[in-house]
Length: 207
Image (cartoon, rainbow, N blue to C red; front, top):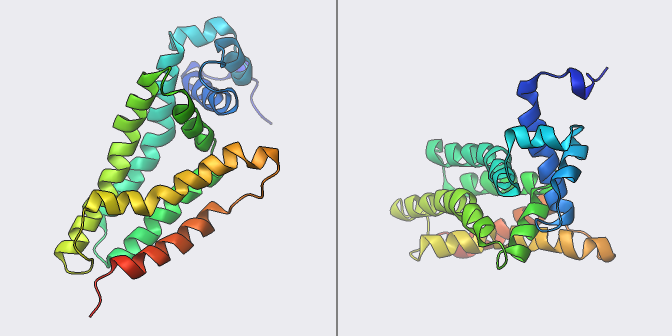
């Protein structure tokens, strides 16, 4: 039986608030999201939320730190410890990222950041510095290492990394924007598996 909210340990509350904030941000966007909505989603009072987070901006920082940082740490560890062919690594990394996008509300948060970056540039800065830089950097570093081993063709590793990951972003935007109005969805893991295989045919160095 689930423990009632009011009987849970206080140490559980920040995580519950962050989870609720992620859902509300994904559904309503940053500007329209209200602290009382986040509190209601978490099963807490508005005042209880303010005990842990003074502003919506602080909550967004926490969403990035708790929602994306652990997944990025897994991605970076996979890239840093992999000793096999680049093909195996990029296939696993793409599947990992697609699984996150498919099974969490973070796709809605991505759409929110894109849609509200002009009015709330701090959102874009945090997402770029804490998510994009680390994720794209890990993939670019793996590509550079593959080039040094002679597995991959010469070229800008960062541009290759962006080319490899771009369909995932497009797939997320499609799901969040067009699926709600009737467009057929894409299976994001399948989309990425097909795209990576196609990209590798052009990227791998061949005799």
